[in-house]
Length: 186
Length: 266
Image 1 (cartoon, helix red, strand yellow):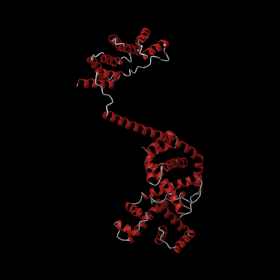
Image 2 (tube, rainbow over the protein chains, first blue to last red; image 1 turned 180 degrees about the vertical axis):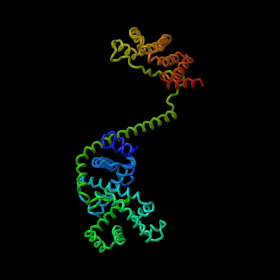
Image 3 (cartoon, rainbow over the protein chains, first blue to last red; image 1 turned 45 degrees about the vertical axis):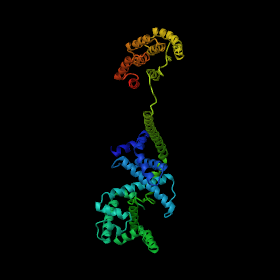
Image 4 (cartoon, rainbow over the protein chains, first blue to last red; image 1 turned 90 degrees about the horizontal axis):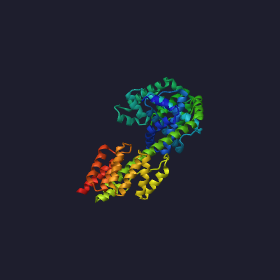
């Protein structure tokens, strides 16, 4: 079924439709969160925040999704949980200053971060297979030595040059997209 | 961006700079707007495309943030309540599904238990009769709409107290007025049966069957009990086969009773 059909149904705020979405999608989200350091309460909280995020975003910009609604909702839930886990990590390690915001302001930032994530992953999908492969290793902070060992590239210098070119292509695609203007850090 | 700048940013993000280099780097970020933009984009890429991390927004377009915050303020509570309702529905459905699952599992266990430990050990036709006739499962004669509730109460009261003759007196009077009341026929047939007036019982049940009422098919089951009690086993089996072939009232019991009777022959 077209993902936008369910999206359009969701924004009608009908609890019956939302129950259907809950029945179909919550088990997978719960499984993901339980397997990633969370509990049932976390899963329910993330699921609720994700649905609210989608509805709020739709109220402002009537956006459309390209794939299935279920896949889209799962990504939103996964990203909110990633965000939550990293906030916790930041609070514990105190590496970066954690800004104090009210709940609604923080949710607004989370929504903008989700949009930025979508833009970046969309552009990442547009670069070549080779670039995707090498940049995935690079962004995972894999050392050049390991990249050489695990790919067909012959030296660290070649890898550096390749990473540089692939990153340039990716950043060009992002900067060219006007959506980035409202998502970039000032 | 030059290759040198690219390497510098990467080393900063990989935490490979000395304290001094780090300070120089941060100075450059503060003073060079272009470099700052390059650094921030690269940082966002690192954090977004690495599954272990997350790219937080901290200094984005304030108008955009404010617009979303207002929407959250005006809608989040209401939406939260709707989603809570959906969550409750989901949980209720899940509990019901679990209950059905466990009931089915329990039923399966009971079935296994019954198969391993047969609950009945019927060694004579009398025992078979007592087993199946222990409860006649007759519906009450009394209904809210009945005009003649006093007589119906009296008939049922006599029947329950095993005053079958007295019960028959009431039932016959009632049947005169209400010839299509199948329950009255059943009470009458069983009263005769209990009084060992088998012919009268049979006639009554035949009358019920002939009247072609909704409950007429029940007549076959009570006829099978009648013949069993009267030691007319062939007739009893005939009735049971009619019930089984036509899937009449007490179809499963009929199959079981037929098997019990066959077991007695062995």
